[in-house]
Image 1 (cartoon, rainbow over the protein chains, first blue to last red):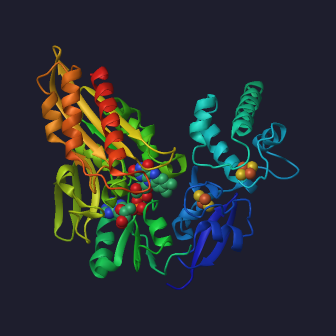
Image 2 (image 1 turned 30 degrees about the horizontal axis):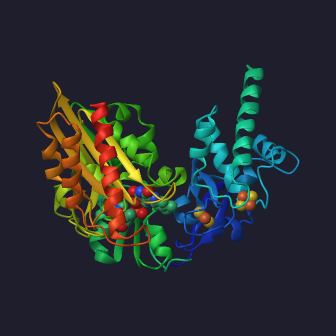
Image 3 (image 1 turned 180 degrees about the vertical axis):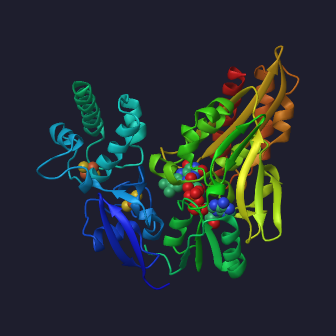
Length: 163
Length: 284
Ligand SMILES: Cc1cc2nc3c(=O)[nH]c(=O)nc-3n(C[C@H](O)[C@H](O)[C@H](O)COP(=O)(O)OP(=O)(O)OC[C@H]3O[C@@H](n4cnc5c(N)ncnc54)[C@H](O)[C@@H]3O)c2cc1C
Ligand code: FES
Ligand code: FES
């Protein structure tokens, strides 16, 4: 099938792309839109490095055709924070050494973000279960879990202060 | 890992989807969550010329607990199953099983319909549906048709569904008594080395009904009528449980693969089936 026009909202901005239906979302993001936060780890749906949010769900973007995301709202790590304004999760990953090589980190944080939206006050076990689709080959997960729990605590404190 | 070229269709109702399926025959395939099909397409183990995405078809979505019957639309995701409070109350075994499928990302998109229609012996929902005595509701160019989950699976990836039929929903009676879905896997997110679904009802210290089905221990799910029958009428003591486990293990036919040799799988099956039966009884 010839190339098709698809429209996605990526990190709040409407983006028009032209691609074959067989193009995977991770490739559209990285190669057409220059959104290189989501990484290609395994490309076999196992590692979670390519995790993005589609309509409020954490999804492995190596296992979704861009055609399926036509009309959808997509959020990547770029939509959560910026170098001058880190997201709380990014701050906490830095503070607690939640990363070493950093390859898994964009997917990990994007996933953790959705987890905390759904469960703002998770137990350690719930964090571990909630990030089970994201592999890290460096940290041994301890510091990732600490970072996410610290981010949850800070987000909750900020919410309380605002009330 | 780029799949071969295909035409992409996204119909908004079942009749439009059926028209595309009918036109293209076995060159066409429906796409649900895509988390079994897309990996196969990337490996080029599935070559599909016309891909029919079902995501816009509202008729295929939703969960209803109505009187004594539970109906789940084919496009309901595992995540939606886990999240549905009415369902968790009416049939807690579904939540217990769905939480053991894959990982959070896969559960957000993987559907009940895709899981049962796929025909992969590793899928967890087929055995569960056999345990629950579910009925699968199909629609094709000739109209609708119901098939019992226990009659649906023929061999790995071979099912009773015709190429031009779509699975619309699954339904089953609200289960009674104690339940358990027990799964042994190598790591979180893995398919089962062995898994077992059990529902047991007890009255006055005696078992009145029992249903036992197993996952990934043959080229289809296995519902063991004998294993259930062995428990009925007993007090579900150790002797009866042992006999039920033996009957269930006698019904399986595992093959050697990267999850282990046949001997090992039979051993694991025995352990998993026993745990499932014991947990179900403890909740009955
Ligand atoms: C990393 C990983 C781990 C996994 N682990 C598990 C696990 O532990 N247990 C488990 O059970 N599954 C597991 N899965 C599979 C996952 O649950 C799939 O999502 C599921 O098997 C299929 O659902 P789907 O909606 O993604 O279907 P799809 O991949 O879209 O479709 C699968 C097949 O079913 C057909 N189909 C889909 N919907 C219909 C319909 N309505 N009517 C007719 N045919 C239809 C399709 O044509 C296709 O042939 C895993 C997947 C991944 C990627
Ligand atoms: S690259 Fe998508 S899951 Fe590994
Ligand atoms: S920090 Fe290296 S893979 Fe996670």
